Length: 195
Length: 246
Image (cartoon, rainbow over all chains, first blue to last red; front, side, top):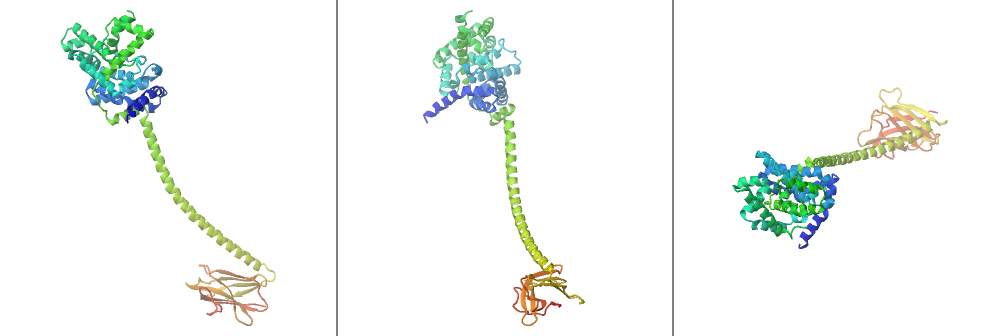
């Protein structure tokens, strides 16, 4: 039983490159495996953003299809598909939130943050519960304002100006919270995040 | 801006919070393929990905997987294959039952054909024997039943080497438990049994007693109705009596 997590981790690590190649060869079974590996994580993320299970499922479907249709641009040797998938999922969910709320897109097009070339090799970490617990612990160490700022940015896609307006705080204060929070997370997780 | 100056902007860029002009400069810098900044940007992407992974775990409905695969054209194919496999299985079962029935039918038909061939072989042998008697140069012919109201009619052919041939009509099939028996009656002495036979439903009959016949000693050929299995001597009045004509 002790070997099970190790075997699972090895399976994820070994299967990732092959999985991408199979996706690029349009192997539908590879899409099924990608969903089996990341479906819950993607759904959880999108549900956290849109807070509606039905809409979340529609967006999960869009996310996987988007990856399925764009995987040709992914270089398997330069990163893992998991982080890219999460970035696409976040982008789709925030786009929905903006359009549903009548908000304009953020000044920065989120699309450029989900470029496949920027995906890193962190599949095992994303799927590792202990690692996720460490991230949550690091988030808990932030002050409430800092944590709210990070969550508004990540889960709602608000710009710093929008956050300032939402939180009723000066823009400079919000910018400070954001920078401090990011530095703190980087310090806390620096050893945990694979280089 | 140079690489060190970008350092504080990577996470902001990854979160979508980078302001102009830093945002455009970072994008242009990454597009130029700076390996150092690309690596740093990946770390920033990892950090933001971890934030996303802190969302409370939730499970989508089981149908979602099927929906996604179907929209990619996979589950539909699989469904098609399922139907194809099911149809194949049904067809295979049907074929097994059908061909099993056909096999039984063929076996019965084969047995019937074998029986038919056997009978035809017997008939052919009998016809050959009959033809040998009929074509024999020394064969004698005797008619019977002529001039009677509804008697069996026909002819008896005798050949010294081939035997006796009886051809009859108007001889109704023998009743249950009964059979016709032919007799070769010598001019003196007891009748000799010359075989059992049954007539056809149309009243015709052909019977051959193969073997040499003492033409000079034979006085007549007769037919009686006997119990199944025959009798060593006639037990009833002859239905047919054909005296040999010399």
